[in-house]
Image (cartoon, rainbow, N blue to C red):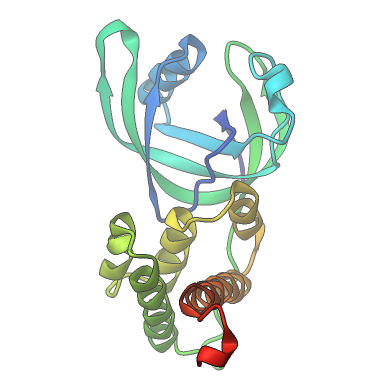
Length: 219
């Protein structure tokens, strides 16, 4: 399925389906985009700007072709025409072509479906619980309160859990973009699990080094 949607490109935001994204809209072109979306389909597509975007930000800086379309769940018009909005991720999309450049970009996109888990090989509930235990271990190790919300996902779908963790975890934008581009939930799970295990291992090694005696003869 293809459709045309407005594209909001940002340099440090990767938006995933089944997650919420709060945005403050202040640039004139994107204020108009928001007005038009609210008067029309209520949809906005988010796309990550490619490296080097600074040279053409106010023009048509290049973006990654895989993004996410969101539905405006909440909007508040502020003084001066600015907006606070809340997007809910609906689907990954592939940008096929841009059909409008000014005042904001509109793209023809293809809606993308994630490959679901093979139910003969995986028990989704069991996998979710195993993954959340790993997340809990990580959150406990780093002690970051803003990640506590990840521990409240127990009753959510496997896809929601994966995408929410990918969204708020302390990953680089490029790592998050790579996760978004994966067409399979199994691949996304494997990569997220690997990233979490790597970080946990690094934290434990750092703790061992921190508390190791300077003179090994003191052991």
